[in-house]
Image (cartoon, rainbow, N blue to C red; front, side, top):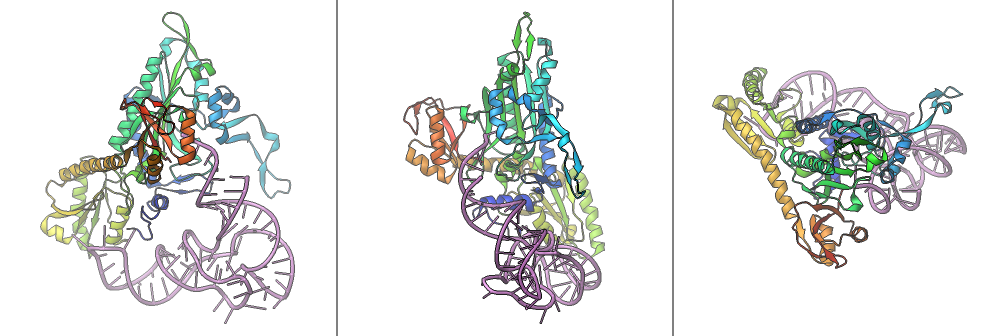
Length: 490
RNA sequence: CGGGGUAUAGCGUAGUCCGGUUAGCGCGCCUGCUUUGGGAGCAGGAGGUCGCAGGUUCAAAUCCUGCUACCCCGACCA
């Protein structure tokens, strides 16, 4: 265990913060609320990007890039959209600096004031729909299936590394379709991609559903989401996919001629996941010994550490270690052989354990004699000594086992922390302890707001795979069509 | 924006109340030797505008005034 590293039980949020910093994932920057993503953290993000990017492309999407700046007037066009983002926008008002009169400092040149202010994008719907207007005239131009990898800025009051930062990285998909049906299908297709990614790559089980009107994206007709449960019992929204109806098409006047020569508004979707997924990944699996990474997203899947007394011994071990490294790499496994002489083995053990490397192989003089190797897995912290014969297949299987074990562990945690609650008293008591609560709700925004005010719990999602069970609202006792998921959220 | 707090080496801190030698300690860093199967030991060494600006004083990390930044709680937040 790292020195002075708090346990989850002692102080969960301190644990999270220290973990992010001490595992070299990210740190706070000189700019308030903005983080520096360090190489190790960024390597994980790149693996996420690569997997998602392939999934998008396999389903017919293409990448493009739109400007970071959006003319202020664009935000006037979709009323609810501007309302949702206005309070957190950074605004560019000038385009030049100059040396002050006394020559001592650099100041804003007031003569260089912009005619129209530019907003640093908090999301790109407006500039993209302004652009799509020029791309779309006929049904033959549809659909447009575009994604962009970008940074966005939302001026949040309080920030936390990866979970909520002023600037963050994400992908945003923006699609345009002929029909409502096709757009809804697209929205759901992406939701399924996000679900697959969360569960199969991140090993994080998620609930799929829609948002209540209160929590809906500004400008959307329907917001779909995936919600994950963190180890402290709080929910984390891991991805959203919005059916935008014809709202943006109408706001930006994007019409097309149908086969029947009729002029119609385009149907739209938008969808995104961000570096917040890093937060979900970290919080879902890690333990009091540090980070735990699922093999599919670990920048280093296997680390090999030599034990030796003399240089000659190291040379012999290195021959063997490099053979193993090569055999593993031929299986597509990423391996680091750490033969640095500047750190002792014990130090390295702790280091890689803290950084969540799924498998550690240790090879020393004893192993050379016996043709063996010590294999330690990060998820269970178990160690065993194996024969080197066929080691690449053994490791390949073990990585698969670790991947599925992490998912199973997270899934049983969620199951153990999901509760069906039918009385308001039980609800208030349970919400203090965390977890997902399945409860009935009368469907009104007022009730949702009152529950939030009294308990800080929000409706995380209205599950798609619903129980179709009618009942009475936990708060008002009025009729309810189905149970929804309540939780306190990040 | 409201309430509370903090600012001393890369990091964590002592000293501040009650002004007085060369600002101390731990981790980390550098050099050498011994070590290496779970964060090594010994010896030596480098590193400080004490957040910024001004004031009081023979003398300021310490007292006074102003400013700035950051942290916590609330509000805010898809």
